[in-house]
Length: 243
Ligand SMILES: C[S@@+](CC[C@H](N)C(=O)[O-])C[C@H]1O[C@@H](n2cnc3c(N)ncnc32)[C@H](O)[C@@H]1O
Image (spheres, rainbow, N blue to C red):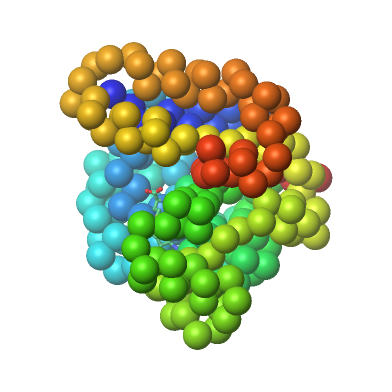
């Protein structure tokens, strides 16, 4: 069974593959790729794309290298996504994305600028981030970190950084970097996320249906007041297109 998050990744990559010019291998960059555990199955579904991951935590980077070892068209770079990515051409990626990263990024302006730099004109930029830490806090420590991240960001080191990310702030940064915000979608209701855990090893299509439901009813979700919408669907994806 694919999790709701994996379904989202397949959906986004599917969009990028559809938009890529015929005869050209789509290029995809994943900022803060963690262990890139989702890449091998993604490659089975879409065999023909180039994947470049960027990851600053040594243990996650090592795991990503291992997960990508047998995929000749995939590689990872060990660095924060503030600095240029060596050997990668600017303005050359059909899709640049991040998953569950923005809420941990201390310098959002630099991170979005870097991501914008690598998308090609007409290409897609999708940052999907989690407001769960801020809105459904599980521990006192998490609450404290979110408070510091929101109000005194400088006191938190990069690795412990977490905060609430207002969606309009992300859109403003897209505009500033020559990206047209084209949509914002809302995902992963906490109960659905809890539900999928019970079916990890099953071949049920229940979770596929939940994802299809998420995508089908986005316009209804958007009629809800922001506070309620984000509590119900704390994974927020801001979609942009490079001008
Ligand atoms: C919650 S993990 C998500 C990993 C992966 N994207 C996934 O969804 O499984 C957040 C990741 O963001 C990375 N990260 C945090 N700040 C970053 C930055 N400024 N540049 C690049 N990566 C960053 C962390 O190292 C971590 O691997």
